[in-house]
Length: 221
Image (cartoon, rainbow, N blue to C red; front, side, top):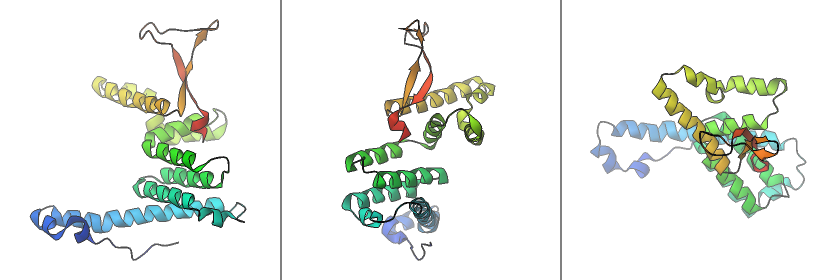
């Protein structure tokens, strides 16, 4: 599957006057917009289509194509293409393709619920997707260990402690913000500690002590 011959009219995007008004960087911007960005985004969409094709190939195609032509699923496909065009990693495009196939073939999900899932996916950065995927894996077998090793720059918090103090503080704050966002989005929840059936309070924060996070039913979708 190839997408060729799709060129962007740079003058329509930047305007001849604008490029002329910035003679130093103008030609560079025109080149980036006209060639690099256009080609990359077309390649990302082509990658998405290939992934979707591979995922539906094993399904019962009777009625599937007709279902994909519905107004609602065409709208979801537009969401998938928008997401893929902006996706910098193949892994994110894989998530988008899986979500599109799952939402358009799952009779238990209605259109509004599917739109919500696409909205949630668009709000997550790549690090948060990695954390969510990691939380969804069982901590046994090779898959969990292989995934953790592949993404150790995101998942191995212990490596932060070797950094200079201020850099460590900054990275810890960013790392914690990923989990806060996933919790606020309803994709993870705190795994609160209890002592003899009673909540354990952290004396430093005065809040109920959490021993980690667990993925929610929404996060598993």
